[in-house]
Image 1: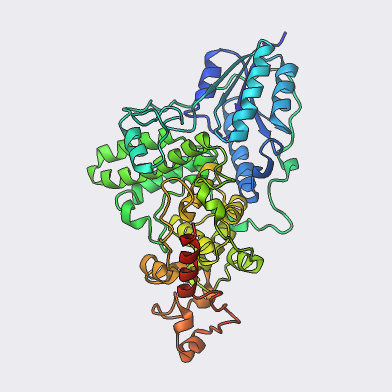
Image 2: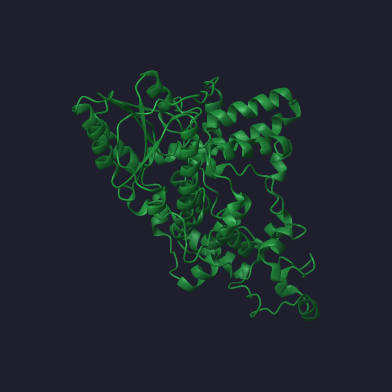
Amino acid sequence: MTEAPAIVWLRQDLRLADNPALRAALDTKRPLIFLFVLDDETPGRWRIGGASRWWLHKSLEALSADNAKRGGTLLLRRGAAEKVILDVAEQSKAEAVFWNRCYEPFAIRRDAAIKEKLRAKGVTVESFNGALLNEPWTIKTKTGEQYKVFTPYWRACLQTGETRAPLPAPKKLPAWAGKLASDDLGSWKLLPTKPNWATAFDEWRPGEAGAHAALNAFIDANVADYPEARNELGQNRTSRLSPHLHWGEISPVQIGAAIQSASHDTPKLQRGADKFMAEIGWREFSTNLLFHWPTLPDENWRDQFDAFPWRDDDAALEAWRRGRTGYPVVDAAMRELWVTGYMHNRARMIAASFLIKHLLIDWRRGEEWFWDTLLDADLANNAASWQWVAGSGADASPYFRIFNPVTQGERYDADGAYVRRWLPHLAKLPDAFIHKPWEAPALVLREAGVALGDTYPAPIIDHAAARARALEAFAKL
């Protein structure tokens, strides 16, 4: 008779090392069923976006191979997670189910319902923190309230003391001897084909090994001067860990341990390490906001913004999406996103500010576009960051902070390397005009092969006029 297994339900924790749910399952000494469910039903409008689906396919391939090396197998099922989990538990006669927690509002409701129904059937169910340094209910103000400002929140996080040590990956996985039908990963059609708009995504290396390679490369080359270099658009000086973090191919506990070890061994890394960990802190803060304010992706956190006079301008929105605004740094950012599924963090702020404050287009339209096109699309991060730029969120950028796309480009892409990479038709413009080609003399444009309105658009709106219009709109609040 086949021994009753334990199910490890994998979600945004596609790794074997530092996986608390896996460790708990192993401790039962039962054979294991590794299960991933593609649930496009429960999330509603927040089903996984196009770019993230590419990453998921590659990550599941890597995880399946890692499992196989240790004697395990990965069961794939598609459908509403509640039905799938209950079906697999019944078919396998599983006596325990383990998972690491997710914090999206629809996931919390779903998981609570699954936990209740499994326990009613006599199945042991446990969930764990596998995604955060501090869970949303653990960090509170002295009066017991939720933090609404990042700096004191992160200061409180740092004062909580030492985090746990990362858990090692198991050397062997006890596979269940029973038989269950598994979907073929290719049948999920997560990869684009006609057309294949993801050809440039191959520069990424999804999977647990790729995550650790990215972390090690970042520590070796970029931590020391991270506070300044992270804003340089033309340099690859950020960690590029965000897609790995979203899918849980590496945990913040592992990152923190590696960063702390490196800065301990090399003290000159400490300042950069602290700044980078504060960026991990922003991710935690965003999750904290989403947990306590579950309407964050859909509604203004500050309800006074409900009266904001947003403009419906589909032509302007499309120009922004396609990198045809006439402002080179904005257009370069949007081209980078479309080609690579990624956008430099400084560029994200510039592009978001332009959509919201130059074009007066609702931040939720930008949020939706990023959700579909970013490899690292994360509901909490995406919503909190868009609302931060709009001024409608917690600890938000003040409404009168309106990025000038020309001066932002000149400051953070001084030699024009970023613009020249993503807008090669502007490559021959001198540095003095690379961020404002409309000011270039006709001869300079002609020698650079640039024809405004033809090879490159003229600005779709004047910055000074846009700024005045935005300030007037914000003042009405």
